[in-house]
Length: 329
Ligand code: WQD
Image (cartoon, rainbow, N blue to C red):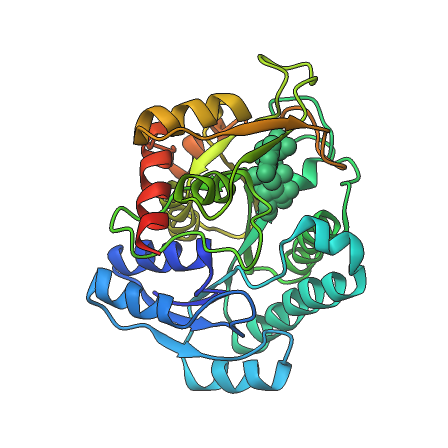
């Protein structure tokens, strides 16, 4: 199929482009490069030895998107493009609501106009709010702690309503847990602008000496060792989950957790990284981070049942692959 990947030069988007190409799909990327570099697509071409068509456009720009749809016969879209920094969303909410909601609406409108019937949306476990674990797709969602999470929950509702109103339009809402790691080549990976917000890129930058120590945000949570527990999933497994969702997509709206089903604490991840890469990661325990919840991880059984997809890569490969990318960059 001919797939439009918005945000395709980003961290998860670029890994998904590789999985799509390797599965025999053709790929068109639309990205405004606000949080990624165009060189990533050259690496995707080098890794797969396949072509990627690229348009530097902002997905909120309906006219630019219409021109793209008029030029290509698109069979499906995967919508990654959006802002994703939780902290920034708290300080700049209108920027997040405009960009993340309008891009989803404009893209869905273009799909209706051009008869594109498959829509895969990049959602997030954040939409569950502080629910009981493990998070299950059938749970009632609780309010999230930030505008970023609200834009994901709202986009899910918008797409669900559009699917209800348009028989034949199929939507997959993929709720990611914590994506980490990088393609085994080490040529693409997570390269956040500025100081990393997330744990793994912070650890790899400490390992490289760019940062002098990790701050562990609290060790007084009711967890195995007091530090926060999350469901870390290798970004390549996550990418494969998108291809599985696209290939199995049928009419209506379908929600899937993309996680491993396993919880790992901050200190367990640090120790796994140290052991996997034979590197010491100095850290200091500091106060909890505002908005953090103690523990969340997926019930990953629905994707396994309905998509025949299950995360395969373990924590060691997540740590090794993340470190290999950091060393190259
Ligand atoms: C993981 C754990 C921190 C950094 C966020 C977004 C979520 C999703 C994934 C987009 C927590 C601890 C972290 C550090 C630390 N993004 N930590 N020191 O917060 O679970 O999820 O990224 O969809 O929407 O909220 O990920 O990597 O920031 O934190 O101790 O320097 O590591 O307290 O327990 P999080 P994270």
